[in-house]
Image 1 (cartoon, rainbow, N blue to C red):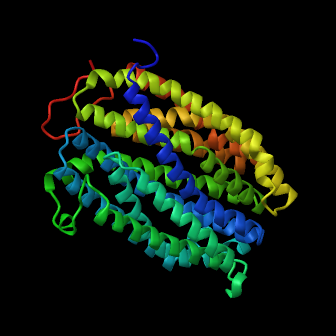
Image 2: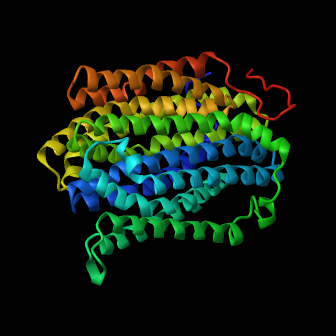
Image 3: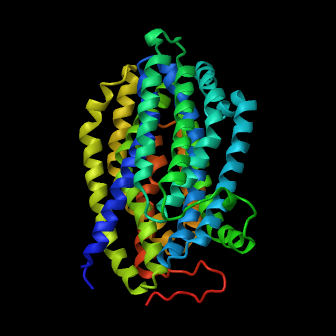
Length: 458
């Protein structure tokens, strides 16, 4: 078997899904980037405060995407068998999980905003600016959760263009309202961080309305009805918990770990917070193709297994690994050569700018590892039904390698922020060795349907 599959339909489906999902993701991240850049031109404390709040948003996003990926693993196989009725029931389950979590998170940050942000930094001015943003933006959490769970449901049946349309509308509305409400243009009040929060909340409500409108009048595959969100199917609930809970736990843990990492840098000063905010946001924008490839792979692997074409799965896996590396190298080069131009949009101190350049240099290398291992583990392996492995792997690297190493570097050895940042990102390279062994030499195609005979890899 060669490194590249000869199935031309595979390439068409993979690249169509990858780039459509990537475009959607780049616009999703661009909403945060718009707040980031516009507030960066307004004041550095506002930029740093909102950067901390965005870590809470990232935690929500990771959990919601975990809920959505659980839907994709189960529903993509049903889609491969053209069995639609279970998909509606799976969506019902996922939507309830997402909403419950969003409500709990809203309650915590709304009633304990200072305490929440105090875990991430001890800079009083930064916390004050962050609270202004947090107490408004938290009302968008439920809308965000419902929108993204529904979009993941549509993605599981290869409907992805609506996600791009929704995210585009969000970005346009957010940027226009930011311009008015942050700076007080066109007669609007000058609200600073609060204005950015109002703009984002408004755009999240509108994107949810657009998704509902599409489900009512545009969707011809799942055909969701209001009655589908009634009583849950206990058998499917059991399957979802078995398959989805490791995914949700893994994503939630990753979100918590990112918040801890931000907290470590946050205690190294306001310059480190601002630099990390800029570097991370730019990285998220430029790495969307890598994450799009991971999402596309999960859908394609799940659907291929559902169609009973197990012999093609391993063939696709070899091709995908080469594509991931190509995407990673291209992303790293783009990040490295564009960093100077990107920083011209920010009005920040020279210390923050110098740190941001150093952080982006590190990310331009580690993104190659990110592109490979994330797509292999969360795309191929998780799409193949082995959802627990990623949880175990992430648990080991986060709690036994990254957090202890970076904590020691920052607070025990008192090393510079650049070294601490390298420690925070080292797992992106180390996980590649695990990914190579797992996908090429271990079993990862598993049954996700209770009572179904275990699928063979041969």
